[in-house]
Image (cartoon, rainbow, N blue to C red):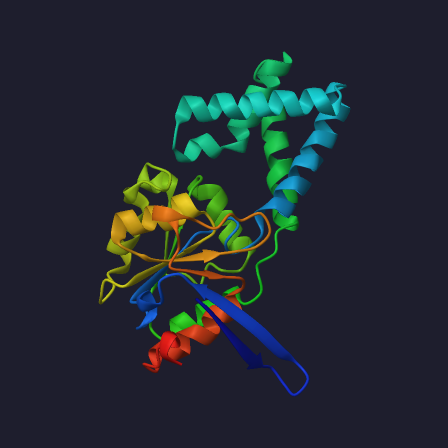
Length: 272
């Protein structure tokens, strides 16, 4: 079900927005708390990752005298080895471990200083190329004003995810954060979601989960805590189906800024 709405930002600046509802009845009242994924939900992941990998690739090929094909093959092999070894844990995403393993595959042994340098190059470039989606801070402000608690539920290690939140200037916008390092498991395991709810102590059990991944975010949150799931759609995102189908799909956070006051005013979107 699509509900097109025009939001006027001035006489000459109408913004047409459409939310696709798969389960409209999930949106008959406002949330008691809202959970957010980080990567590819609050900001587009791919542009930052591609820029970061190119910076590392350029440095590595220059320092080690190897061509880009060998770099890519060695890195991909290293990433696969680490993920198979560590499973669905925070450290399985560690760029430091990827680069350490990559250097060993190339034949340079561990080379601790080089691994650290490549990791710093990656994250420095990544952050400088990462930009929040429009409307994120404004929507978080709306939730804060409405007294609705918020939390981040994200994979990867706490240190780098904390760095991202501080870099984006979001450290004072969220009430809590739960990383897979803290929880002991990546999403879609139930632990990260349950810990977030325990921290927030919402007044009711209507929890929204906003994320881009249909399996880890939508399916995981629905299975773990019975969440109302909202999938953030943009280039490269595959909309969930069957048990991973979201309750609705948004294209931008302005759509949620329009939806929230309707629910707070007890004017359900599906009836408007």
